[in-house]
Length: 414
Image (cartoon, rainbow, N blue to C red; front, top):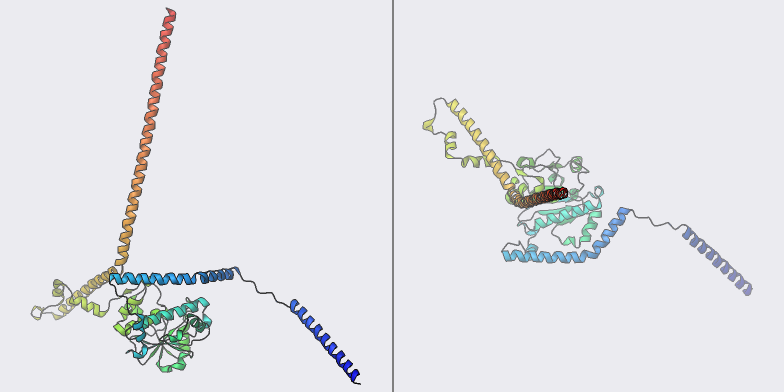
């Protein structure tokens, strides 16, 4: 009985092993048959991959060369006696917790779904620019970044220990961090114009880098959420050739400069890049300053003493008003000319140098052309004289031949 049981057990084991082997063989065969081919990359993807590989190969060398150039520039500045700004040790002590400025500014980073990878990189770069400006200020703003998640968080983590920066990073939405009534969403499409900054408010900058693909999105979301919104008073103080849409770091730096200067025009004009073509507008204070610095003969025409008042007061007021308007218009024109001359002074310097270089090139070219023409004239005269000499020699030879022939014929006849 025991032997029969043992035989049955071995048979069942053999059958199970055989079955398992068949199943394994089938699965292996199915695995080979069902093996899905890896997706092929497009030409653009291959180019990007090759560029990335090349960059990784030379990345360390380029960073080293950049550091050496930076050290050389700093050394040259020290030799010239120029100020290099605060050192890193000094900047470590310049923190938001020690600042006298209580104004809160937050960047809304909850736009990952609207941006491509390169746009997210630009967003993080603009956050870095804003942080750099803030930590160099004597009294930094209270700087927040809300809605940090997804691709933006991955990009920040790839840069290193971003949590060590003096920025209050929050994964929550800004409405979960701040009171809804205190929020003011900044948008260029808003009809409300920001006149001043309130420490009790939180100013939100939309962290959207989309190259105008989603125009008016921030304003639309602010209205849907019932938030207060406003735009910077750019058109009141600055004339711009381009649109009023600014980058994140430009908006941040304008707010930072306003807390220092309390002057919108100076804040705009010092921050906006030259490509925007920003020209400051004249304010009422500038017009008053112009009237104070008015020449004596103009001020005498505009203001009359009480002893010189005419009998007809209405005509006096009318004449005085007309003269003041004329003087203000003249001063406005002079002011605009001064501003434009200050703006383009550097461009004029560059253009003068370029003009001198171009004039030198033109003069040399003209001299070369004149020498070439002179050589051509000389060669043509030379050729002409040589041809004339040859013709003259031929003529003389022909005359001598005729004389000889005549002499020969006369001798023959004699």
